[in-house]
Image (tube, rainbow over all chains, first blue to last red):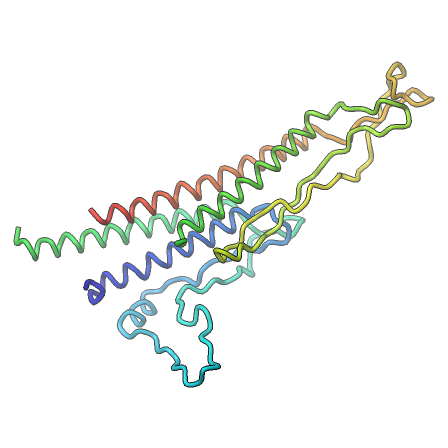
Amino acid sequence: MYDNLTLVAMARKSMDWIAKRQEVLAQNIANSDTPAYLPSDLKPLDFSTVLHQTAAPAINPVITDPRHITPAGLNDPNVVLVQKKTYESSPDGNAVILEEQMAKMGDSKGMYDQVTALFQKNVALLRTAITGR
Amino acid sequence: MDDLQKSTAIAVSGMKAQSERVRVISENMANADSTAQTPDGLPYRRKVVTFKTELDRANGINRVAVNKVRNDPSDFNKRFDPKNPAADRDGYVLTPNVNSLVEMMDLHEAQRSYDANMNVITTSRGMLSQTVQLLR
């Protein structure tokens, strides 16, 4: 019902993105001592992409042949990229910097706070509209 | 599993791997003076832990796991102690290749990594409960 509200759809999109990012960052932190491990991160979420995706949902290819398969994550906006450029790497080839990862995680947390606050505000507005109080 | 639960699972695997590392470090520390019983025997050899990334197919996540606990091939230390039963003809005893300073550094590193993983869990849980709060 509320999916038609742009703000709800956008909130869901960015919450999905943050949750996915949290998973990727957790992976980096857990592997902070694994030899030859390169950290990854999600492709940054920018406003125009989200707006486009929300306003006009992605076009899905039609299956015209029973042998066609749909690739996993075809329209998944959350693209995981391996971080090729890193600040430094240890002698065993590991390039995870805990501080960097923690800072990213703090960023994500802040964004999540922001999104949930906005969502709550929006729900409060709706409530005001419904009850008139 | 949703993404936040997955990140908790990954952090838990990291904590498990780090605690295994702490176990091996404590083994090294405890055996820092374990010499051989006989002159031709070898003392305790230091052990090192290596990690690897492991794909958890059921959930589609990359966990971390202990790869192997290997022996440190470096040379043993020598100490002059002719009264020791393990002393050779010249009175020298081979002592383990454990350096307690190195072990302490390793222990601290393991602790930092453990803390970082713990932080991941705290943050993920906070976000999850925040989502639940939205229902109010």
